[in-house]
Length: 393
Image 1 (cartoon, rainbow, N blue to C red):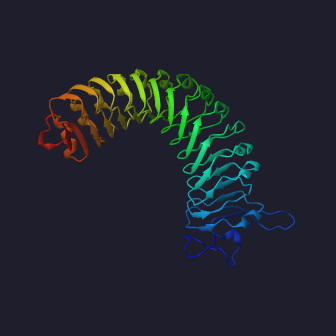
Image 2: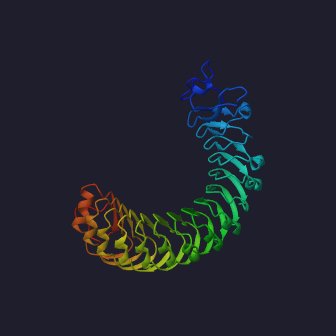
């Protein structure tokens, strides 16, 4: 890695100027013997750097922060830093086991590279670690036990090839706020022991092969969740009533599972909800009237279930809705005109139901005003002035 005309910014680099004035360099006072300022931080993120990490970096005794993310760098750096941020580069090979011997490291980000092999169990010896981000690599094998990572607040392993079951020892990661394991090939049940993660706010287990019921006991303790993503798995059974305790939840996504039963009435207590995705399951019953309490809801996805009854006119009270997908169910009756009061609506899918009558003029007006860009209904429903963008036989 050398400064050249390809760098976006290279002010001061490799000139006679004081290195503490170089772009991206921060210094601190040196030792009393020399009095020289020492480099503490180098931040050259997204600066079009290319090549390999220079070995000279290991000689910077005061260096605590190295942020070279979003460049085109290869190689590795075996140096104990507080912040080692090398995401979105071209780093290949395996994760060095030596990282586990670091005594100062707080944040290790090697995400979006080309790393392969397994996650070394030695990493958990770096007990000072607060954040570990290895997303979007080619890592494989089981997730290590991580029994000594009690101070870890963020763990991001999504978009790899990890397999096996979640170890029950995850219960010891009681400081975790963000847990992202999406898009791997993880299997088995979600351990009930995870109820000990009481400060968890983001839980992303989507696009794996988890089975069994959604652990209802967990939500009596883990009540700070803001984002819960369990979609594209093999979860079965009912949606537990205990999800109503997640009063801070903004995104609840469980579509593409095998969930049964009715939509819990208590969903109406989740007043901060913005995304409710329950599609592609085996849910029955109707849409609860309690949905009218979800004033911040932007996306309602109930498609491909066995829901029936009429579409409640009270849906018109949800003024922030942008996407409504009720297709592939057994709804009957007429399309409520109150939907036409939702001027934020962009996508409305009502096809493959048993709806009758015509599309209300209030809804057609949304299409004419170019607020509603997609309106899909069955061809048996009358569409005045061709306001439906697509009808289905």
